[in-house]
Length: 401
Ligand code: PMP
Picture 1 (cartoon, rainbow, N blue to C red):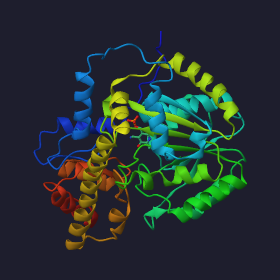
Picture 2 (cartoon, protein in one colour; picture 1 turned 60 degrees about the vertical axis):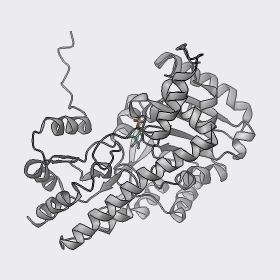
Picture 3 (cartoon, protein in one colour; picture 1 turned 135 degrees about the vertical axis):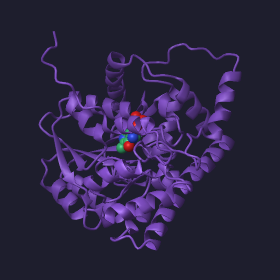
Picture 4 (cartoon, rainbow, N blue to C red; picture 1 turned 90 degrees about the horizontal axis):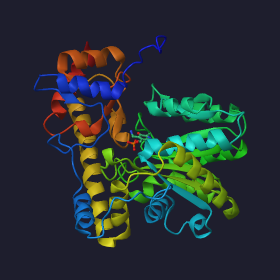
């Protein structure tokens, strides 16, 4: 049995982490995986998360009963309010359905599964080139065709807005358009508000269906509302949409798999039907979601004092990343490293698309023990006051040779 199976490639990013872990060199730097590290290179449990966990464990009524199929109701409501804005009319008018998912990946997957069953079968999903690798795997898995739209312009090291708009314009009407709500992965390049308006105009004219993947709200800019701007703008314009939310980065709850999928509809009467079908999908795949991370998020989002503390924790993370961008940029300028480097400070969020080429990445790995993906993406969180100069000098060297 199964003789014909070909061995698959390991996941590029997790493989990179394994290589880094096994590298005995003391100078080694892991810029692969998108997980926050403090300035000592250590994982950081948000202080507000520790407080919420104390509340959970001190609750004499705590038990480990199953959650309902679509998850914890208070958590789902709070998650939807967080992304759409508490006073969004769609919430008041009960035109939304929110389902607790296995983190952001599960939210994207549940959305894809839902679309494959209930959206038109004759249109593809349009995804940015490049995008988070899992987008392709997930949509391929549910049998929806994938068409790429240009996103990254290697010359400007910024957004290829004309190419993107043209691709959306040329696509089959009613296509699903997958958009990163903020802090685009892997490029760190987001449309400006003006460009979002242009994107919305094309989507409206072509009756495309926007699907937002939001993995970095609050983590990107340190401002929860600013990072939700694009999603709220599309909803305000009257689009029906799906929004996948992850609490991995903004709460540091990576392994707790905490997420939510929110459907925004134009008609409240459809909500009940959609929710019932989401429940069928969820039942067949995970039966019901895990509780711990959802309990933490739920406590923090419902307590004004803890909420404010969370906002401060988000600022701690986003400002450290911002500082690393600045220090890397300053050092490259000081070294007079050939090329332009403004994009390092202009890009946003966890990642920076450096523009380094495959061969240069190879040398960084082999000669300098610096691990990054072959497309030149670095996780800014892997840089610290201790290794940023070392990394800049390594980049300087590989760019010159
Ligand atoms: N979407 C994007 C674009 C991401 O970058 C990530 C995190 N790497 C996710 C979704 C979801 O990750 P998780 O399942 O860990 O929440």
